[in-house]
Image 1 (tube, rainbow, N blue to C red):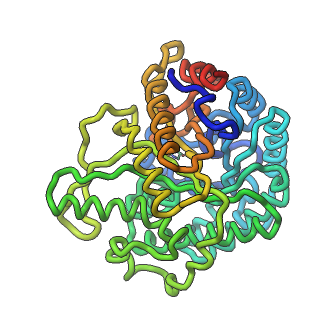
Image 2: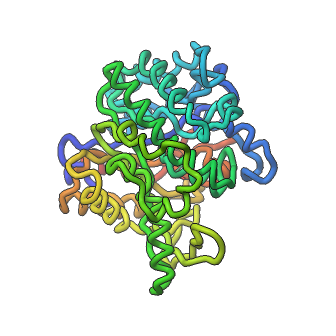
Length: 437
Ligand code: IFM
């Protein structure tokens, strides 16, 4: 691996990321049911109907996992808090055991000189809130802000950074329009409402955290490097529309106080009442912006109603997810964001990594090459003027890859899901070496 820490500025942070439902073991510690438990119990939604009830049992093995990060030489850990673990009904009563868990985790990180980077919501909505309409209900902005308050009253004095929501596109579009994640809806009205409420919830939660004095608050969105599949006007238009939905809608709300016309042309008729008066709430000042990047997309025009876009398989080598490997897309996204949205705001790569069908003991050379190439692309973006402040590897552990179950392995550390044994992969050791240089 070419990567060396000394090629990056001294205060540049290297981190690993996970999320609560994907690793903790939701069946432990008095957590309430979530929409992922019911989505996964519904035949056809998740490979082998797998769920996060046990996952990596990080709930009991968290010290071993923190030791692994410390030994690797990382500076920070990006994790999320499970809403239903802290508030089993989503509102009201607090599960003391759940809050204690995150309290211990934060102290354990600080004891190991790892900076805690917390995301409040990484997708496991409490079922009681899902029953009330979940992200389609405007009250979710207040529900999330209340959850933010409960969590931050306990750990807000010790976290390094905080973000309300991971990947709004997945929370809204993937889950309410494409139906591929919980709650598995395919409904344009629910989608339009969720797209907007994910941002009002972001805004209210930022306000709630600021009121408590929490510092270093940001937002995290995911991006793809989008290209027309053919050089035709129709494919270009379709790619523009796809890009507007995926890449431009959320940053439009956060940084420009407006949604792109190419999205409104399809969603405006379905938006919640008064949506266009919410931008001062949505556009709360931020201290940093987080970019999750994995791949590119080739888009063609499709027949049928809006958005009339179709993904076409591309020519580049692919990961276990079937995602094309396109490191220069990361540079494209970072420089485009900096020029059009984030300007001088510090940017973190909050997720990047690849799934690979790792066998224990077999070096994961493709992952090493993937990370090396993306770190180099990040460096190029920095040379082009992007104020990049950190890089987070997805993921520390093999874990629950949502509707794809436990088959897709993103970890730097292999997890044997029969006995939960952790075994660092070659990529873990390659990064460990690079971090020491
Ligand atoms: O595993 C997910 C994570 O939960 C959110 N970002 C993308 C990862 C890989 O699909």
